Amino acid sequence: MKVLVAVASRHGSTREIGEAIGEVIAGAGFVVDVHDPDDVESLEGYDAVVLGSSVYVGRWAASARAMVDRLAAGLSSRPVWLFSSGPVGVPAVPAGDPEEVGPLMTRLGARGHRTFAGALDRGGLGMAERAVVALVKAEHGDFRRWEDIQDWAQQIVEELSAEIERRRRSAVR
Ligand SMILES: Cc1cc2nc3c(=O)[nH]c(=O)nc-3n(C[C@H](O)[C@H](O)[C@H](O)COP(=O)(O)O)c2cc1C
Image 1 (cartoon, rainbow, N blue to C red):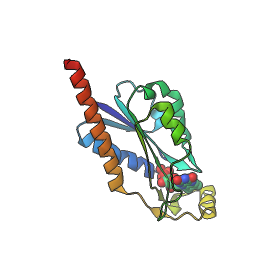
Image 2: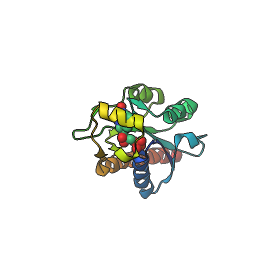
Image 3: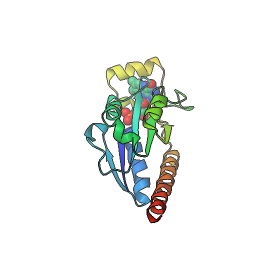
Image 4: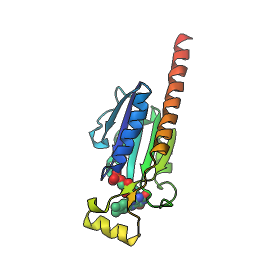
């Protein structure tokens, strides 16, 4: 089984989450590609997709949304999991999932969605970004919880393994 992890990241921290998810799935014996959504032209050859995005001002990245629009049919006919990354601070703010995730889940028939805490690096931000961060008094730092991320990836591995077993059984019938 070949799995695509497509991940939209502006400053790199969500990309690293996608890579960590990919490592767990690859560690279980699946073939995994990690790509930027803009680089995904087709889902041919992929049996399942994990699509993630960082969240800026309440929204998924344009590249992740565009991938959904471009490949909606292929995504809805495969097992798909979604994740978001953004909330920062302790406790992580904002709480809850981005608003557009519910409709995305329904549109793609996604099997699950998780929001993971993100990372804010003052030095890497542009002027406009710093202004927004100052306005909402967001806390700087790396709040990613690798154990949560790896646990979620492991759940995907288990669902994929169950899928293989289902396919194997229906093939011998
Ligand atoms: C200008 C700005 C706006 C942000 N808006 C949100 C937001 O609306 N919701 C959220 O959860 N996180 C928000 N964040 C936090 C980022 O999503 C977080 O830093 C994330 O880890 C960045 O991912 P990246 O390194 O992949 O770009 C914002 C960060 C910045 C700099």
